Length: 365
Image (cartoon, rainbow, N blue to C red; front, side, top):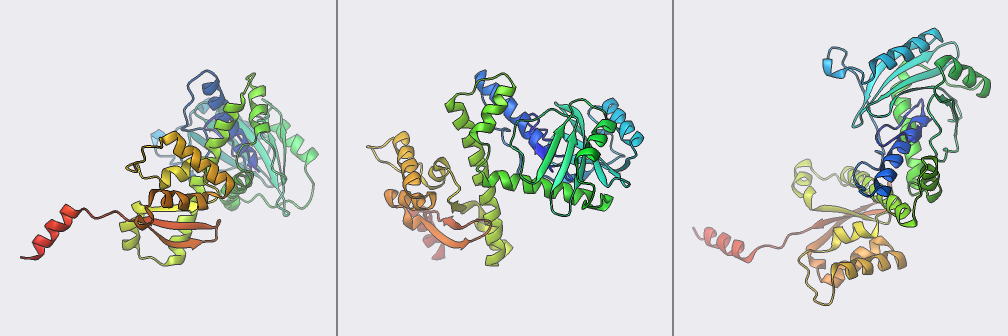
């Protein structure tokens, strides 16, 4: 399965599924972010891996599609061929500076993958996937520091050749019950394994404190309580945004709203659910023009945090509307239950009196 975390944008997505790849990518993300924070200039962007990935076949006729570390990729390809693997195809991981070359071993029903990352470099995995949805991976990269998903077993033989990785896979993984490593299933299994891994991490609320501190320690860094909270906040915010997007897509399908109408109002739509952070609720609900001389922004945010903690983000959203006396500016259009319970709201702009006046004058002609 996927192992992700290998420096901020390279997450070893070793599927088949190579769930080992995901963990490695995240590890890189964490390392890069922790280093920036501890050296002082942390940036919030690019610190959380995408929750879905897509493999796009590489265009062999496009000169811009060359490998980033061509000689290393060719060496690993030779090792896979010597170990009895045949090439399935080459792919770009959409949205990431990461390319992969996939292989299959028909005798041992194993997948092989070469990862070529712009910053991290190259590494390889060999993988078996089983009918009971468990998987075994042996990787040439280092241990990443993230918790393993309960269905995945991984071994890390840093820098070892493909023949050694395959030998370890055959020695440690079950000898029966595995799925056939068919070429036509690779892309779907790769993407599905990544999705399953990330859904598991979403349900856990993102990176745990233990994972963050473990990764920091592996990189000879100390991580303060504030830094742990900042990293977790970034994960929770990204999770909230991801679930909001999925809930909105779900509502669009079940509501049957025509495309023309949806496109007209989409900029005024928001999704409210209980996986949003207090800061996200604040940003969604508070009107920047709301004036209360007794409150500053910090006190308002603290009020929202207390409300989210005591009740729920969904209730806190409505509390803010009541506090601003702005309920009339919002209309709840519907509700969905999947991927989670969420409310869909439309912010209705107030009509400008001058514009109305001019419109009425035009109607007289």
